[in-house]
Amino acid sequence: MQISSRFTIAIHMLACMDVFKDEYKITSDFLASSIQVNPVIIRKILLQLKDAGLIEVKRGPGGATIAKPLNEITFFDVYQSVDCIEGNTLFHFHENPNMECPVGKNIHRVLDDKLLRVQAAMEQELKSITLADMNSDLVKCLEENIFKTSPRLNERI
Image (cartoon, one colour):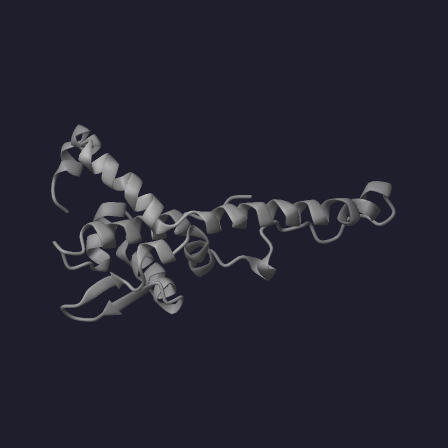
């Protein structure tokens, strides 16, 4: 099991939207240059974030902006908007265990509730972290000039 990179890409995008909001027009090309992915991927995630009400996107001179205060957007909000999980379950269970096997016959009964608890714990943790929390940590990193180690990152995007 692995959560797709759309989640971390979306978080990165939102961080850029906040950090660079007063300096640059936030476009898919701009975001793609920071994340180093194809702008088509960025545009798809922008649409998902927009549909979830987390961002606003204005064509032409507008660019993308965050639609809510950072302390009102949780990692869970972002996760839900970009990482659609089938049937609202994180774990995909194999479909046809052998009902003639004692383990296969009982595996759902002994495992399903445990997997749901794991998913609920993960979702609760995602709900406890806001973009404001992440932004606070990011500001500390920027103040410490951690990014000066790479000439490319030191350039303005």
